[in-house]
Length: 583
Image (cartoon, rainbow, N blue to C red; front, side, top):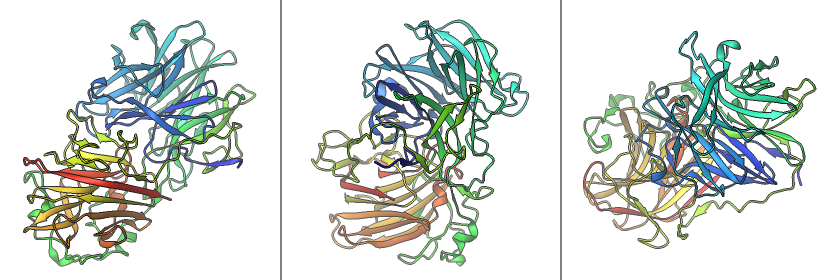
């Protein structure tokens, strides 16, 4: 067995990890924002290899998603185990990032589920709530709050309140245990409390979830006393390093002790890439004389490619760029499409009683030594989904819970059927979209689709999304009585046709859609058999799906999409199989 492993341990959009151990088994949960099912739960026995066993939120009636935008919804959760019961506490954010923040608890006897309906805690404001079960049996809530004093930007703090273990409601006084002014901390959040060596330790995130992200800690002899700030804070951070380091913006941590006495930390980070406008312009072709390519679609209710003749003259398979003002580039050009991922880091209690990173450089590394645990082999993760199981795989998510299912595995056995919905991906809604996380910068995704559009408003195919404002559509539609395949980019309220091809053959012929990603961008191909790859658009700018561009908290999703674009339709698209392979 190798004595090292490769970070991240969960690749793709799996941020804000929380972990607990029960005997020799480890359980971890991450945030999921508006995607449903929500709060994915993982199991491992060696801390390196993980398998998804369920979701904390898996039934629409458990929680009202309130049709919130992509970076709201289910924020950072905490998972804990106490006397035969698993607990997840979570913040549901709606009406704005610093507007309504409702904290709730769900419980289960089995971490795979089912989990209870949400029990909301009255008066629990703030985000990133956490639970601590003390030795005397008392149950405590720790959470973030926004200081009413607002002495500086990001003046937040951490408060503590006892919980009634039966009603999950506050009892007793609320105590501020870390006012950010004490350490001049900005956006202090993600509190977790541990008892070790006679001390209550408080571990928090600080600095915001980008450039200055970090892990800090404090301690006290009593749980609700005056916490001493660690003199070595931050105990983990890459804020002093280039944003272009292979792992960046690390923070938001939880720790666990193994049955063999080691301590390990799970935390989030990103794997950035660098691409400038100049580097994109050097590799693409574009017709400058066509005028303004952008079409505002807010008032038309339909895609610009159905109406706008003022489009770039792109030949089949040519590279395509986006207008120069299309991508909001970030200072330093550090982008990441995969979102914030989960990493593993060895830590140790030092002689002075504080945690420190237990490796040579004190950083979160791509290659790290393995925990001293037996090898765990989870179930194989197959690259293809043939939709022959009666249950949809846990990897597939919708945007918000659907009140009425728009997909079926039984209407045509062996296929996944998507019913066309009027909703469009460019809206804050629940469109007919089933997607999975992009987990690799370089990947191949291929789908076999049977779709016969009946009107020019119907479309089905694949979508690559960051949110409702930033995405690519790769869909089959009808134009002048002929089936066409198109690639459309959306940025905020504008859409741009990047490429379009008339599909050969009969209207009922199966089409194979392929999307690949390399360092040069996203590439879109179609074929009338699974071995043909006819390019429609090459080198589409990957920065469109960067979390920096949309200023959001999620990562890119790839999946199946069908829409009638606000027209009535009973049409559908059948997907025989989907393949995703990354490297």
